[in-house]
Image: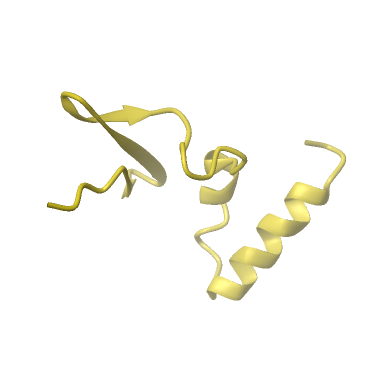
Amino acid sequence: MHRIGEVWLWKDGRIEVHVLGQDGYAEAAQSRVFPELELALMSSFFDRPTALQAVRAYRDALKSPAR
């Protein structure tokens, strides 16, 4: 049987990460697979008209010294 180690859900305008542990899935603050991703920041760009625009906006935000 395959066990998925991490599941992401879109809920109430944000990404929820659930990781598999010994007792099942539990919500986590950060991804174990992609710990460097700023999920809250990334979620803020999901309202863009296209995926490409969202990716570019996220990339630009990561480069911003204001972070």
